[in-house]
Image 1 (cartoon, rainbow, N blue to C red):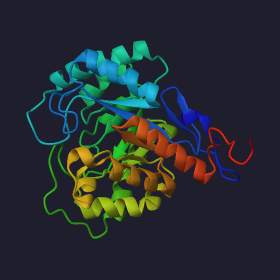
Image 2 (image 1 turned 60 degrees about the horizontal axis):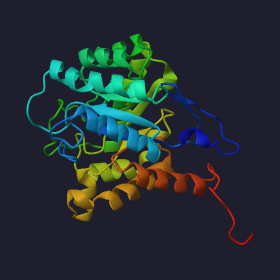
Image 3 (image 1 turned 120 degrees about the vertical axis):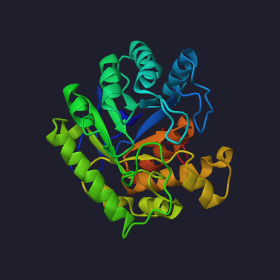
Image 4 (image 1 turned 45 degrees about the horizontal axis):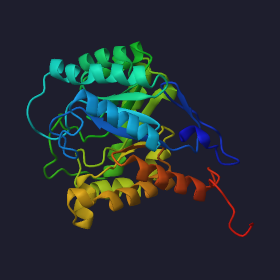
Length: 300
């Protein structure tokens, strides 16, 4: 689990706070995805019903998730979902999670301040804004609730739109500039600095080459000092890079996860929790931040 690791010797510890969880430098957090949507690109509505969503939460916690990310609207274009419907899909679920897992950090994946306000009141701890601050009130709502916020690069696109021939002079420079500006604005709005994260936004406002470059140069975003979250799981850039269908993207996802962890990312949004947990634990152990679970080879 995230709080079982210690910072590497000689480094300055920077604690990240996710709800009730304090995450020291060197610890790697698995954020499990729980979609309360009937049309999710990955699970096709498998956790749309409340009971199924709660069951998934219980399962991913057992598999090693450190927090869960609840969403009520899929990121891709599709049927319009009103704020009221998004609230209906997410508030009851968050309340149920909070009742069953009082200490578990919960994030709400929304770009709407009015939705965030309701879900934070129901027990969420973090606003995961995947669309780059399109609602200027979102950070203030997070601040009012004492919550954290994820500031994501989406290339300036409106919510639920796909990139089309998007170009950057330097995609990583754009990622760094936009996310750090959002992070500083969140602090100015009253969000505690140790509750702010940045996300390079793989696939959001990017083509596959952009997402690969954002991964390859992730250390440049890490160097800003803001804790970095990556959402890599089963994304199109993995599928296009390896020329594999959705059900065959786990290996590529875990490769990108390992690289991102080595380069300094701290939070990993994932569908496949057990595999992600093992990948991150292995990286942490190679890096020296986590002891092996057992060491009997050559000693017995």
